[in-house]
Image (cartoon, rainbow, N blue to C red):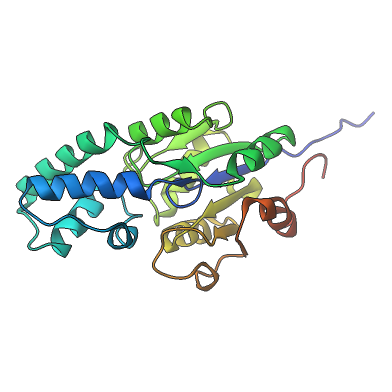
Length: 233
């Protein structure tokens, strides 16, 4: 009598800012308040859109660079801490889940997919936002930019998260909006889907993803096209 074997449940790793959520208004408000407190001009959302994606410290550094000189390292660290306090006090005031994202995640969970967030945003803020915006019961694991010693585009960010989930790259797909997402997924050996509504400075169709989607209604078809299958091999 032969024992039936089944493939492990597949994993979809999702970026957060610009992919699942439109957080730009709150990011821009917190950065503008920080800069104003430092005697700098406020920054427009379109400016901040080009600064997002490499974590809070880089965002703050870019904000200061765009409005004058960058503070000395010790002062910059203090400004980053101040920014995080400002942001965490307002991070869901104007942030919203992109249209169709929640429905898509619910459908994937119902089909047996395991869902995780892999973001360069700090982990504490990421967890709070995921819970506040109704995704807490859908997302199994979260890795922020400060969870491990590395973050995207380093593939170790993805691989360590998968390891923590007792999963491997062979059964996983990455969903993101930036060059960091695509580069990390490629280096980790994952197929990758890009969303066209994201914050990256490079148009989604030029990022080199395996598939590009304009709406979450297109996500199941894009995943199927990548050859992801449930059930026995």
